[in-house]
Length: 540
Image (tube, rainbow, N blue to C red):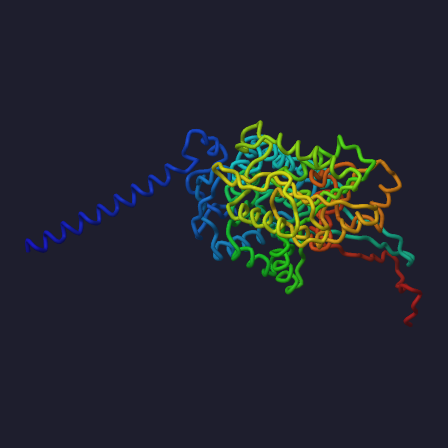
């Protein structure tokens, strides 16, 4: 008996010790999260906490894996997110489809009013949400704020558009007949976004899709889930204040399993995917297999061409911003600088000098111009690309090394001496590496611009107006964005954004991109008492 009592007491002691050890370990881990440090207490203004639910469909939940999100500037943990499971995904799709029945019945201008309120709600959180983008993605503070501003701007644009979308009344060849185009929402839009623009790309899709009468299901990047959650909380508050189903703007954080389910799901009427060309190809095949609609925004191997008559006072800051901004992690980043042979050395010298003046530091410091890469894996890709460039005949003029400091910092890099068709030059590396090429003729430069597989953004610097219009014409740039005397990056929301070839062919944001979120019907209405046939056919 005494032996049994001793054993029970001993087991109880061991169990208490284990529980205490787990509690201490869990408590210590929680205390190391940035969100619990006074310096980052502002995160709680966005409704974030130590562990956050990663699914929203009118209510917050999450039954998947718990992941930790890290700050690229120091690789310290920010907070945790419980991702969605496939069961969560299934429930969210069902709720979104039910919410569509309500949303589609609301007149487009009234839907625009809700989008206006979303824009106003984002304005109130502009700087704090921009700070989160900076902290979690790694881009500098002004770019983080600018990204939120893009969402606000597209909301403003969409409000006006909600009173303008519509099809033409066409002349009918038959008397007593009217021929019209009717545009209706597609239904459920699945939006898969990338880490580099964790707010703006969703905003482009969300605001336009909503005024068109669609509901949205968002799967953000697995490495920026806090931003997805914070944005969704802002949008959800607007919907709930208007007594609308929260599932109109649903969200499921998760990995490839959620993305695959979304791409294969016939209930998802349009899949908008932003990301790498390799993953985009997989998504495209899955969507096409079910004859679904897709909108692809993929990679870019963008070039700036500088002619001998260019204004170098514009060229240097443009190339610097386009190559170094967001640490080379924009899809519109300039990766190839194609210089006329007569000015090559001068431009390289001036640009290298400008690179050395770039202020590198913590991305949330307002004075910083250049922050870290997003992940440790990106640092490894940078190193591999620099080594390949050297092996293929390139000379590192500036940068080329990983920086000795906490976080994922690498030196912005300029490499000269490579052939225009070197394998590394034709490879899109999501890092601040600029390949400088030397050309002789306009025909050669245009051909080099077009010879890569991607076709997103391009720009020339020249004062020759004839050359400008040749560049814009059928034998000029084959890209979706064709600029003159400005960088390849920094697109405005009023134009359609997207590219050709391996960039995917999709268009988002302005112009008539709204048509991709709607289905078109050609309608013939007979208001006469006769039944004439088209093309003069008689069937009597």
